[in-house]
Image (cartoon, rainbow, N blue to C red; front, side, top):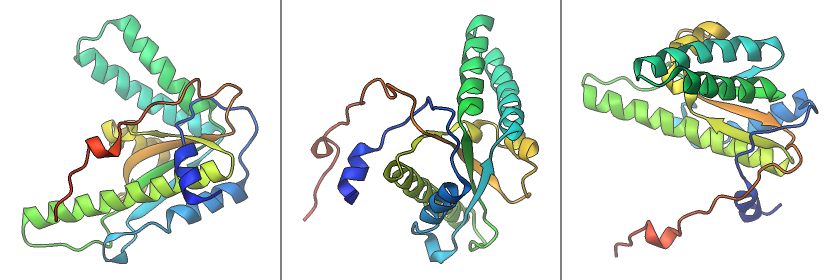
Length: 201
C-alpha cells in the first residue's frame, strides 16, 4: 500500500479473532519500529513481546493498580469493576501484545535538571515514533492494533509482572491481532489540519 493509504487506513482495533500472529510477523513489526528516528541515534526504545499466560499476569497486575487508583478517586465499586473488566478483556483477548519501553541507558546526562528533562522527553518522542512505525506496519500486514497508554499509570506494577530490567520504563502497550468481523464499528473523524496549524514566513 502507498504510505498515505496506510496512514489513512490505520485505526485503533480492540477486538480480534483467535488467529495467532506469527513470530515472523511480530519480528517484522519490531524491525519497522527500530527504523524510527531517535535523538543522537541512541535508539532508546525497548520492546517486550507478551503472549500466552503472561497476558493474564500483566492484566491482573494492571487491574489491581487500576482498582486502587479508582477507589482513591471515589469511583463507585460497580464502575471500578466495569473498567477493570474491560481492561482485562482487552489485554487477555489479544493474541499478542508488545510493551514499548524507554531506556535512558545510552542517552546523554547533563549537570542540570532542565537539559536532563529535555533528554528524557527526546527519548520518549523516539519511542512514540517507533510505536507509530509499528502501527503502520501492522496495518500494512492486515493486522489490527491498539495503543494503550495505561502502563504510564502503573509502571512499577508492569515492570514487576514482566520482570523487566531496571532501566526499562514502560510507556505503552500495543495489542495485536487480526480484526474481528465488524471491527471497528465506525471511523473516528479527525479535525482538519488547517484548524490546528499556523504558518510563519
